[in-house]
Length: 350
Image 1 (tube, rainbow, N blue to C red):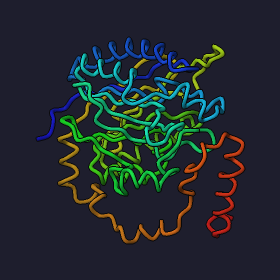
Image 2: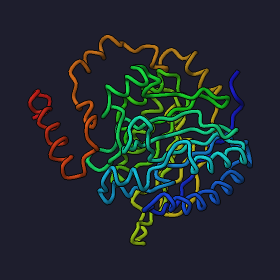
Image 3: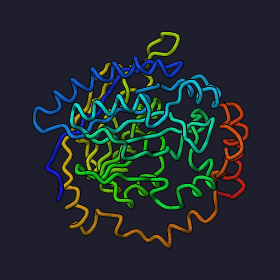
């Protein structure tokens, strides 16, 4: 049986960049105040069942902005899931009676000294019911590991299946999945989630200039329309760096997109903390998927054809199987430029 329509709330928080794990408390305090107001106001018409915190809400992006050493950041700033921070978020889920979707740079027990960018879901009982490890970090600047960077070991541990890379949580409010930030720039991540049953995808955050150019909205709407699913994309507000400088480098454009590719909720401005809401109607989504003849695309995938596209590998797997992720300069030299040359050598680019 499909759930009754409900409200989803995406927070648009101000973020303070952390220098160590203890600093996360500042962001948690600010987030709690905003969440309390957002859930209260968002439930005026329909109950709030889903609360979404954008990427960066807990820790900011110090590792990326300041080109920090991966192992140093893993020791000083990355969290454990579960841990004190997720326990605090779990208390909100219980208090507000919501499913909560969030993100953190987090360590992994099988990869000591490393950290991943992890999207996770907490249910109203305070249990972590999904962990997704970001597959396509933002090239050049993002230092977190991808499962693809340790592909052989990852598949040895988790298997070579959709759940190993694109897990989906089947809940009473719908099937929840994660394709955060740069992941949604690749249609394959959204399609993989959809083929694993996803109905509501977490896609947040995205920086300038990708927001100002329209890429953020184009991708959100396309991923929703192509796969018949909701895409939740609240973007952070102002960002305060460790030097105290406050700037909005996200540019607003927070949206919730419905399965028809239409914007169901929108806040255009950035810089100031607020929230975005929209009605989630899973029954309508499921009707569309199972009764349409045209726009429920997944049923018409000609998989044998598309498999040919991916016969030859492109981005190198197991890149960090034996070493930590590169910093910005070496990444450009050892990965980005050789990848461009590979495309030229194959005659794909001139």
